[in-house]
Figure (cartoon, rainbow, N blue to C red):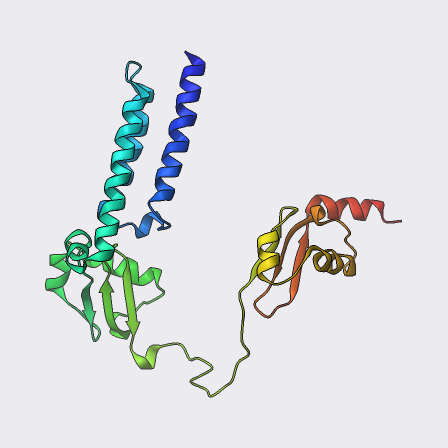
Length: 235
């Protein structure tokens, strides 16, 4: 009985992880309503075979498979058809215009002023009068366009030219070399080991984190244990 519960739990856990992975890369807070509903149903269906001893686990797997298929088809339809996308996901709605709250639009979305103020605070906006447009997106997040005189100053505004910044790439994570990123940066292990040796470290396994920053510079941080060991062995 014990081992039966263990393998069923492990199996359903893997099934839920794979199912959520197949649903795409959205964060939970960015799920559309139909995606959120499917996520909850998948979780419930995964628990059902574990709590009901007489239930065949294949029934739970079949039900989860049907839900994932439905989600995939709905997502495909929403990509292909603007009408279907609007029906399923709804449309963004303007809730702030020229520093004024649009009360009617808030009521249509069943959105309270407290919800709106909370979202603004999370965006570091204290005054509604600073907002040109506030748009409630289909996933419930608030997008804000500040008035031109309230936006942060950029180098372009000051006529300052800036250097190109590339992509920061992880090279070592907890002692493991990320070979894919090395290839992406058009580098190899010899280069990486050479860089470490320049800084007094021979083994990538002693490095907690290493990366190439946006300016193309090599940065790294040794493991705490390796650093302590080095200090103790230093005469």
